[in-house]
Length: 134
Ligand SMILES: [Ca+2]
Image (tube, rainbow, N blue to C red; front, side, top):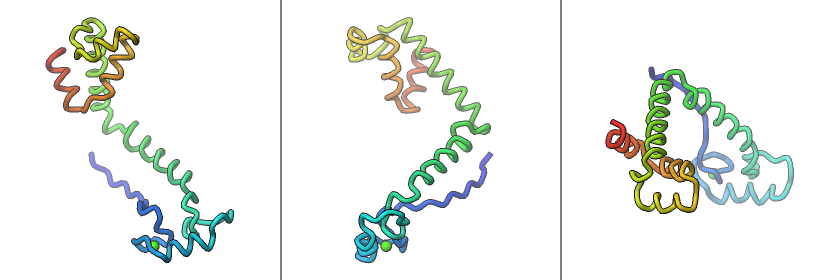
């Protein structure tokens, strides 16, 4: 179910006057306000509003992606795949790649399996699932 979610953000981080280019105008704004407190982004304080923007971005992602009702089935399926693969490698660590089997001699097996899974792409983990649990 696609939903429009207009988000206003700006990515050219040194473009103080937000005219789409970084040039001497931006440098002059920065220089004129250098080391003075209470300045805005357009006055060359490139940290101004950053915390607010970061918080807004996080809130948006949590509301529309991480805890999205529309994506819940896929999230649950991904959790199931990870849970079953984790259990498989806990039962059969011999199915881990040699480098990870070697690491498990120095670190706890659950930690090694988590590290291995964390480095996988979506495609690779599904391939592993089909091969080992399918
Ligand atoms: Ca500019």
